[in-house]
Length: 586
Image (cartoon, rainbow, N blue to C red; front, top):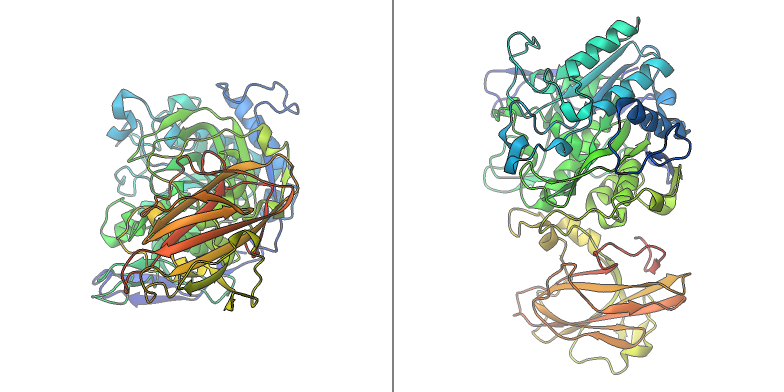
């Protein structure tokens, strides 16, 4: 059975591709072979080169040969014992597509040699791709395995013939066992009768127009707004929700799609892992963009995250294998970055959960990431660490503290608060506040603010552009409040630890901020206050309940709103673990 059953209809695309007849995929539905909606729990397999279960354990930053890489990949895959593991979703008659990340190439792309350095760490390690293919062949034996990507190099003109050109499919990737994709396909095909292994350039594949961004019928459709006049929009003058996107038939028509990205930071999205790897599936040639994937880069950087979420919902990958043998740390602008050898593999059938664990391996908290929140909201997968079972060693034994890409702080912060206001004058005694929904303080009633809902209702067009600026959300009704009006946001934080410390990170525009933690004054007024992981007030938590109160004083005019973002984080800006919050919902 195919991943999707769908109605196909021939349609003249009019403003999209004049004069061409295309296939429209209007109502895709997940089949029994594909991923199922998130049920609130997930299992993810994990392994590193230092694992005692390996025949020859090595340090996590060692350079390894193919046999060592393969053993780690297989160990992570074997540790996935869920019903959504590869033996559970792949059968003998399956067509499996392996989707690596190929954003540069040593023989055709100048950025691969940026600054005189060979950037192997920007793409998926071919040894991992081969190891996954061999696992499928030897453990299951599907009838077809395709290695498929919409690579950045120029199209071969539907001719994968080595004698006519040399590209990333045919060249030797020296750091990855000196392998080539074509040789992997040829070698594995010759070794195994009954399984065909081939390569599909998704840029050359047939295009299908996909309009279903809600496979589990949550009632929420496409998330990304596209610019006026965009062929995927509905207005020539305004930003409108995406109505569809052209994708290759291969990724929609195969039985099982496996995303195989590399652990990598990113200057626009924060990280680029299982879901952002799907950007390579955009059929950009249909839009007249050559091999560029800019079609999804619309609006702000928050808009980009929404576009990636739309791709995740439209394609709904069945499995993910994430690797860090050559990974990207710190800067990633254009195709650049700092090398990090981090020999860890994360594998799972809940692709959102697999990305969440991958972020934890990189030292990040997945609850900081709007992309995973949006995918969880659409029931694509689980994002909360407390609802994910890790099969393998604890993450802390495999993690490395990845440095964020330059000028990209992507932590969404704490977004659900008890709120009071607007008030004309300060409260008399902030230290003894004990807010609950519907209760009153000095005759003013406490309500609930949901910053996620505010963010989701924002169009997120080109200004402000930076992701961290878009993480600030408006206090509802603050644009109508008078200058000098006051709001109070309150939060209960519980922890079982006696030694928990962190910092209070606050960003604000149009307001001066004071904060009170367990009654102590922590922040003095300042406007604007940048939302950035610079040194902020230090917090020493009590075991049990702690109360945080933010006093917000409006400094702008009557038609200006107050924007705010708050996080409880470590010194790197990552949300603290071992805490629970009231109001709930984080």
